[in-house]
Length: 279
Image (cartoon, rainbow, N blue to C red; front, side, top):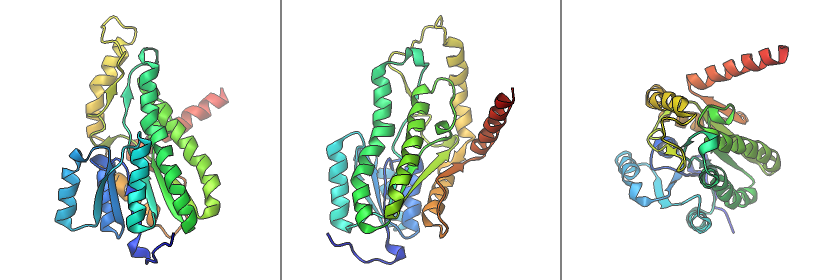
């Protein structure tokens, strides 16, 4: 396969989970900054918003179907992109969702579903893209993690553990692929004003019984979700950090925190860890 010769302003980017939020804003921002961008999503019925925005701004955004939980869908999407472009310079793995519920009340089935999207979905896409980037001799893989990939919070065991797994995956992968000129980057937003809170899933076996031993903490956390998300960083802010990471002339860092709360929480975590070690 021969790769097209392009200048720096003609790079190709692929973004998963682009129908809304971080994926939506990242796709448009990359396109605005010279990337021929493929905005992918599980269902094309949700493509109207990004299609309208791309058409109005006349940005080079191609919208295609890609379900990260489906091997065939991933293979066909990447094959289509390579047939059209013969290269992929940047991959942004953004598709994912949050699952809420106390560990004791979450079934193994919903845990598996969480990992199927947030972890195995990333692996599927990456395994198809790395050989392409390896042949090119360059590429950047961005995995959108979370502050939840660095520290735990109540009622988010499934989501947090999936993001911890993604962090370890990305860090280990970085050592393997750097020899081929491929970079691995983690983006770690704090609370972000997206549809994430709307799309939160409650575990199928989570009890709504007021006598549940977790009723009080569930009520307190549940009532605070929406206000906290409304005060979070914007999806555009996260997209700007992603753009900076993939276009910087300096070697990129492995991890990029996004949002004031993310930086504050990491400082608190450092203090707590230091105190625990001193005791």
